[in-house]
Image (cartoon, rainbow, N blue to C red):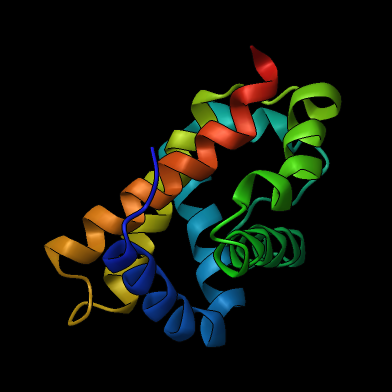
Length: 142
């Protein structure tokens, strides 16, 4: 699966808007993840998972920064995400389904932050982008 030129432009355009709110979007995405998919909390026993906690804020920032790396390296996301893929597969051993949950929560967060911009085409492009990211992060599990 690869992104079209139009999809790449859409991803980059939303990223430009998203990046200035990266911390808030990352934190809100994780808050949605942990409140909607309770089983994801098991990977963070040492975190304060209450809304707005410093740990959620810090980790949300890391998640969005990793997505930023993928956007900046949209033609070579495989290389950009290889260390993250190794970490999740070999060290953290995160259940791969959690990446789909995270993707869904990010899409909802983007739609709430950018309602006028989050058209069907934007939704489809970001869903495809996040599917590619998820695929890269889970390929080491195979």
